[in-house]
Image 1 (cartoon, helix red, strand yellow):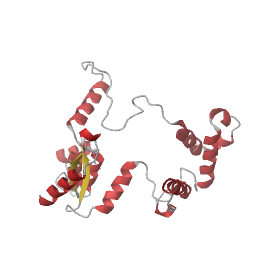
Image 2 (tube, one colour):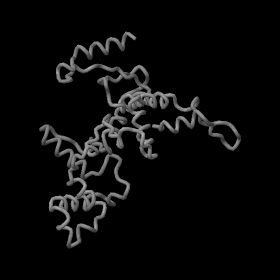
Image 3 (tube, one colour):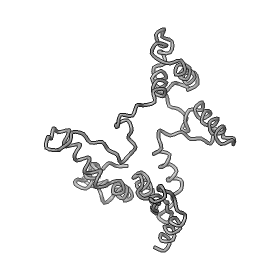
Image 4 (cartoon, one colour):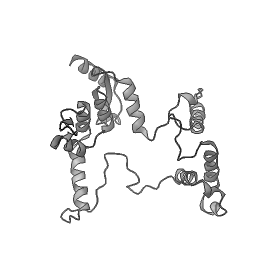
Length: 234
């Protein structure tokens, strides 16, 4: 997605070719990109960005000296300790020569060293090389085994696609599902801006439904039916 600043540049100036005519402006850019921009904007988020900019410039007029965004999951900013195992394994895998150093066992626990050795031996070319678009086979096989243990149902590594976080998985899924503006996606309100933005940029429609606050923010099937009916009648 284009960032807000990039869109502002599109509105304020034209990108000219050597022949002198504009090839990309706010009027010629994919309109779904514009919709996605507004889908992720919000008064509170914009205001927090403004405060962060002012603090970064040394503004002392605000009654606080830090902004902690709570519109997204941000536990480490709130001083939650990270799970060190993953970081230890990544450190060793990214610098594979460390596992053979005599001092490594003083710095890293044995289980992290063993896991790192497994990935070093099985990821072709190491972490710096281009890998399979689905993700490394050894990791997909681990995921398949986990799913089979959890669900007691066979899982095929070839049916598993690894992504760098939830956002690409959501975006790819919506890209495959949405054909045109007549395809609607149900999402709870308030919703994570990723959903509305990804739905908009893929040309679909967002149909919001409300959770039951009095019932621990539970899902009410009648509310789903209401949202679907209103969307179809619109």
